[in-house]
Length: 148
Image 1: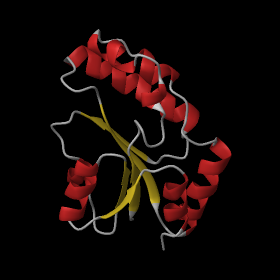
Image 2: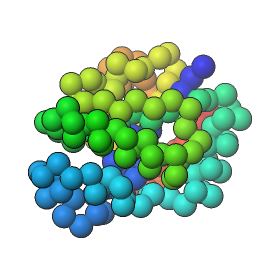
Image 3: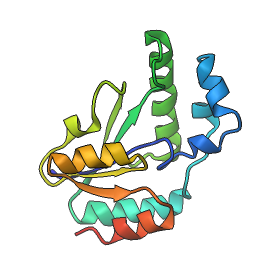
Image 4: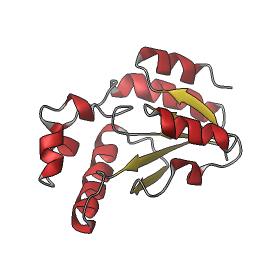
């Protein structure tokens, strides 16, 4: 089954909108991951997700832990991100929380899309033959609605 893969931070989770998010990461505190708000309402996202499902797509999330996180911190981030997804993005079928050592393109399967805010991830995805959608607010939602 083809999958629409979503990045979390800056794409579906307003992680960078959390005040002093970088300071928290430097001291291995999971607070920004715990309190960040969704980028869109559940109603809006559910409408988009339901439309994609009707077109035969599974919904996945590929998200990185903090760069250079210790194993303990990476584990705590993964738990918090999974909890955030259960609460704010429950329609997800597959979740991969990994380190930046794993390129997101490693999860590509024929016909999959990646929705991300980082150009490098999008370029890597395209290089393996994937389709991409740049995370850019309402333009992203419009692009997702137009996927066939």
